[in-house]
Length: 94
Image (cartoon, rainbow, N blue to C red; front, side):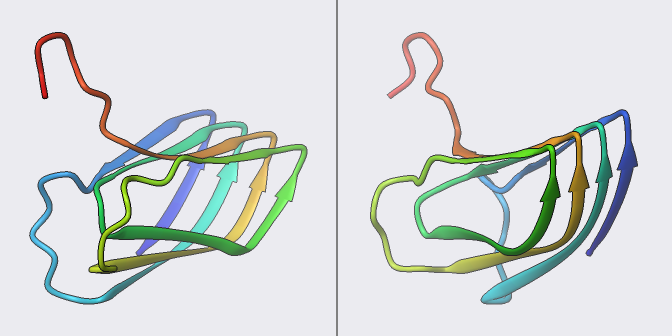
């Protein structure tokens, strides 16, 4: 998957995704924006191949579970942020 974005926010929500492959490669070119990945247990995000310039990578891992999908992000981020986190529980949701 290729993602090219400038001054915008891209959200990929994997919480209800039907996963048919064991890996997903994202080639990213992000300028002054954000990429948010909403994960669930079993989804691992790998940003070791990502080049960051004045940027931040924040990752909160969901509960331990067997890996069903490995998301590998490569490319470049300038003045942006990458956030990978599990879905937030809303009021009254368990």
